[in-house]
Image 1 (cartoon, helix red, strand yellow):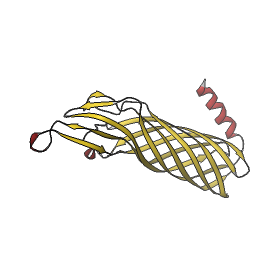
Image 2 (cartoon, helix red, strand yellow):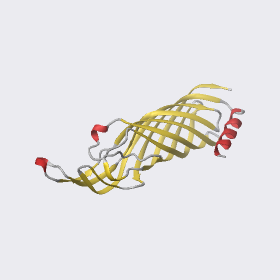
Image 3 (cartoon, one colour):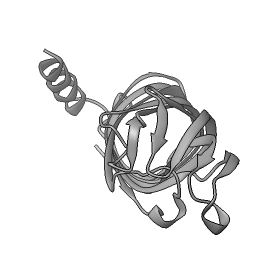
Image 4 (cartoon, helix red, strand yellow):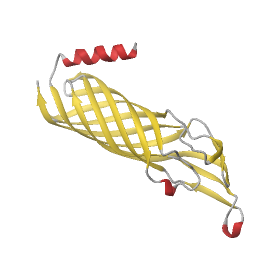
Length: 213
């Protein structure tokens, strides 16, 4: 049913309005939550985990069917993680030691195809965007206590406000939400999972290179 509705919306959009193709830059500040709980792994026990604040940015292409529907694909750096306290089994000279406030976010190369549908009035838009994100881990050497799979997948949704600065350029502000479709943690964990979801605020800048129709 959802697929049929999406096809109908796209078909209707193709029949009206001006088409634009251009570039978009996005940057966001996000807070990471865990839908599960991290308890322990090889050689360590966690006593506490807290939400981490991270940032992301990306560059992408957009295909604006008209002022209502937009296809996008973005490429960039994404981050998430937890702030953790715990005890390692092996410290200096083979002993145990406690650690506190470890904040080493996981960093990913991210690809996000998405579709946005907008309510437009004057120079303004209210866009609702849905996307699917593929994340490739790029800093495995920094993650001493949190083992992360090399590839992970999210769903991504945003709702915001966009304003046309002039004919081919606009600025946008969005509230964003993303949720893991997979368990990010690998076999490094003995007990617990890392299934992140994020809430964030995003700034976007768009510039249309081609306009026709």
